[in-house]
Length: 269
Image (cartoon, rainbow, N blue to C red; front, side, top):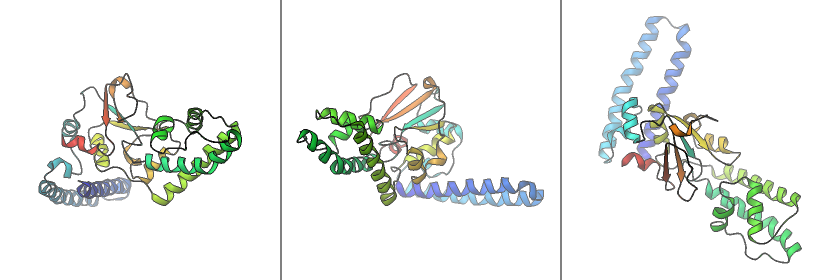
């Protein structure tokens, strides 16, 4: 599915860019020229879409997964969301991207560098070292950095001066940004396709994240154009997509619990 998703998404982006370019030049083109360019674009769309449909069929997946765009009604049927839903809010890490692996690595390095020295000099020893799987999930995931540091320290019966808590949180931020630059970040397979279909369906899509770098992550993952920043959505008309293990939110029209990397599979049900 990943390969056809990439092909379809690139073709969709190219069509949108070409359409935007034509709109920008409309005031400067003669009507005949404008008509010919739009006709040429339409002529390219049909055979390319047919090729993508054939590719999807050969891969044994629904033909809709190969089409760059879908009519609103077909897109809504494909998403299988309640009729009252007009928007979607997605958790960033664990639903759209595998950001948790970078956060875990950054926290572990930060604690390895600073926590041991500070805590051991004050409390002689730490009861147990930082566990990137257990401790990250229990005390850090989804929390602001300072709150996460305090929660982890409390779990070990330790307490640092506030300036050391600030230093540790800042060090984690530095390490995370370096790892982000070095490794990059990519959406899970099927994520871009799901967001595109939600856009086709006329749904407003936005992202929920405790990270101050969410917009940077979305841009690096190539998802920024598919979501609206700081969108004000009415919960009773919104579907919330959360990673398994997160606290399900209350008061939303629908709550969809997603296994990491499985958002795209919802289109194959």
